[in-house]
Length: 550
Image (cartoon, rainbow, N blue to C red; front, side):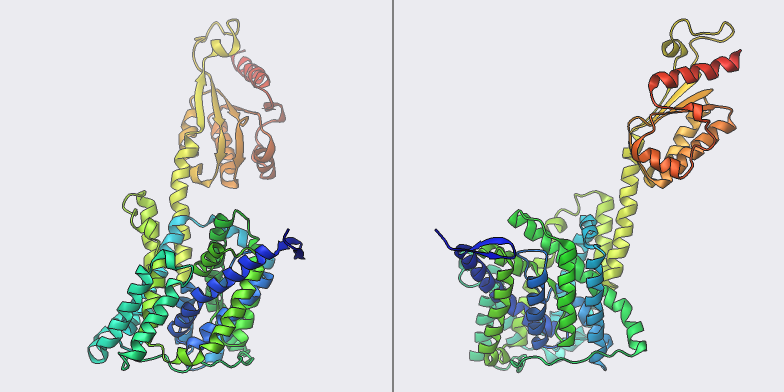
């Protein structure tokens, strides 16, 4: 029998430890090339990518709320940080003030338990955002892929600098990048457990540059020394101007992390703690800002590699960081000779994996509204701003969903006339009025009613109410009313009063009752006309009609 020890309240055995160590090794091997590439792509240098992978990876593993999550630099965080670095190129301390503030905002998100709401983000928005990030990485890497220096200004800056390719084109760099990308894409899956595709691409591409195409530009020396703590710029002007970009980093990192956590949950059949996860990510990014590393979030490729290799607890994350440190110390001299084109090829592969091909290939088959939301989010992500893209995408998705809910909610409304004979019985009639005329109307609201159907309700039901002398508003099967729908009920009552139509309210209970009473919607309806059962409603309607025809 395997020896068992207690770790954080979990029963932990040597077999689990073996899986965690193997998972940590695999995640570190997958994460090293990506961290180097992302650090360079963000404009901070490869060392910043390594510092970020170690710092965020450690704190997220120790304090996080997802047992198998591996954190580090990611595409979306790199894209966001590249914009910030470009804007503060003359004072890099301001850029890392933003990183520290972003970490503090994430901690606040965790304390306020905001993370649970991320799961409500529509898939079309997520797809557009992730695809946009992939497109940005590909566009930004066009110049390094061809041997030219990377341009500042993101995708637009790259497109504006494309003419420079003529002057800086390097055929050797193009060949190195193409071979690196080819190895990363076509590396056999059966070899992944021994040598992950990204590391194989790094080794083969670098060997090609060192042994043959030696003229290709390289990334240069990478520091293997421990990073030093550096204080941020805390001047009032910098702090005030840092709020908006820090919020961008915090939101992007939070969304990225919790989506990765959901992927991990689906693979391990577990459930993460979103609030604790954001708290841990925030701590990691605050620490990263002090050592001037690249901020990070949950990294999907490393997390998947960890889980597939057997990583099941926080030990895997800590092991990944430890192994990453050893790899950097051992491979420091080798890293300096890696061609820029190798990292460009790796980043293009990462970008291709980031693009949501599953949705993109079917976008012409989905509902038109969802396609518009996805393309709108994608376009804004690439050419405007990451957070603005998600915000506008969420608003567009909400409007789209409201239109769909309107029809669904209206289908749950029953508005019918009740024949007097059938309703009251054969003895209930008046000599001077046609006994089969429909003087009583029934309006039953079944299910859920929200702002989506509010305007349609008053237009549709209001006309029916005017055709009756008594209307019964039946809430027996109403599950939920939001404030907008409750106020529409008040409008229906007012419409009835204007038409000299008496209202009887039936079956009001639960949440709909609390909402309606809180807003005093039925202030014009006498207490005697608010009943619980169908028999009481029938008797009340009979009494009202009798009084009218007496």
